[in-house]
Length: 340
Image (cartoon, rainbow, N blue to C red; front, side, top):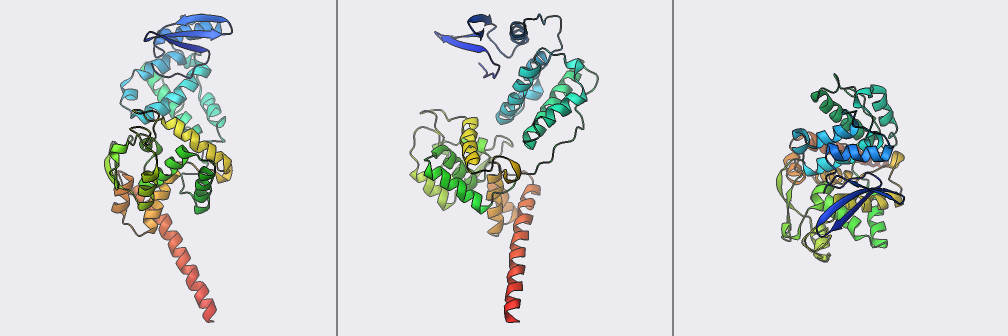
């Protein structure tokens, strides 16, 4: 059964059979078995709202269920599906019985602005709303997508972490014995991969020098050489299961659990929000920037990060070259001042 974030659900398993109930207080109602069906959505919202919804077929709840069944959703990578599903479930939770046909552009802008403290999340919410509205157009529920061309919030971009913050993160993990967060830190920077791809790495993927990676987003297959620091770290890490991030002997812990452990450290060292905000995806930028500073060519950096094009690689190089050139210029300035 797919995980759902809808409140008041009581899920019980008996003899291999899953039963789903709506439970609020002492009252419990049996629901249909599959939460990804229109029947389930209608029954859930009828009970929760105390209203009959069968007369309205074009609800947000029904739209989300329909989108989950669409080829557009099912062709997405597992990581993208999980991310879209998180946003869809929030939308379904807040608007389940509301009629999609009454949705206006101002409502989408209000949803974006409510998340303006986290600009990337706000922009993701708008993107998912637009996808759902496009699906509603395809279903001929509405004539046009009201979310098209709504401006994204600009709160910054993904940046490589400065040395002082890298050191602060590492020290906090070591001081508080936070193995999951520290392992994510070491593996992501050492291999230059996304957190989601790191989460799936198994010990069989690592031969002591190279890490085999299949990127979830691009489907690219890479064999990435691990720097000595990462080799030593992985060599010292207890093997508690098949995966590096082991939940048990055969399964990895989820990407979200890893992200939560990282968030706790980010919060503790003051980089969760505001002008000092840094995100784990910045570790991928950090790896590429370090490679550029070491004088690696664009193709060498691409061989590590697995980017399909050189556009992003060239961005890393430009930043590294600018800093290196700035340092060299200022050092010449100081030497010239000393001579005079």
